[in-house]
Length: 370
Image (cartoon, rainbow, N blue to C red; front, side):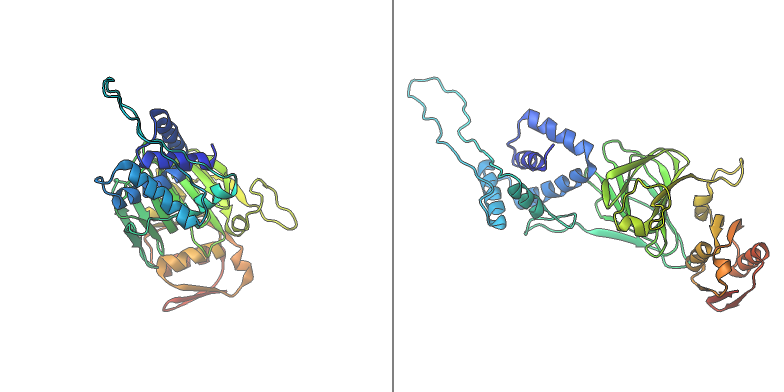
């Protein structure tokens, strides 16, 4: 399916000119590609709000085409009308379609210009006299966590120093959320309206499931850990690359390498490149535990599973709103596996000290380790 065909079907649909076959074709396209579904939804809402029902359908359609042509400054869209059939005085009246339209797409450049008019930086443009959709933002500060319920009933746990943003109405063909930081999602299933989470590195598409996403801009990796259901992960700089996770799967993506759009299929280290992505399994501390290590923070527990002290320090900084200064470089790479429940900073550092055999000092919001 070409993009020219998609936008042709969209124009026919919003102006009421689409045949039944064309409507079915467009519906199939939208169901198969949630990203296009979002663009269509916003475009349709803008069109409906800016064109009153009192105007004749064909006039509104013509004005729409004229606006597009003027904006592009090229006659890439053309249409024509034929006169209505004149009835003979004694002839039996028959309903006729007295106006028809024809869209002519110039190859290549014309199509790309039309798409560019709709899209700037992957954001859908609205018509000039339409109002932008209101945005809701929920955030947590360092040292705090929060649990929220979205309009569709989906529950979200936000870890420290995290933020989610979504449209106020949360309507349309796609339920979309933008995430910065770490969050645990328990998504209400809706097969007609997929749930999509956008981060700086990946997009995650689900129907109904539970999973944890960790995507901080200042960390090396973005992690997706699936508890139940299934999710589809797409690397933003590689939209053609999609990875389906099954229960207990964990996908780790190197942020720097993903941002540079290197080959995501490389799975071995070379002299010049790091591993871009790593497949693993989420960990349960024991057979009796029903909460994975990756999600224990939602139960107010600090859980580290073979993590270096450098990685642990980043989590401690957000968890307790402190700064950790590591003076001994050897300690940075020391790995720890430990679970600490609802403890003070002093108790956490003492537990780590015993396991790692290092020394530390705490001065207000600064921790020094050597």
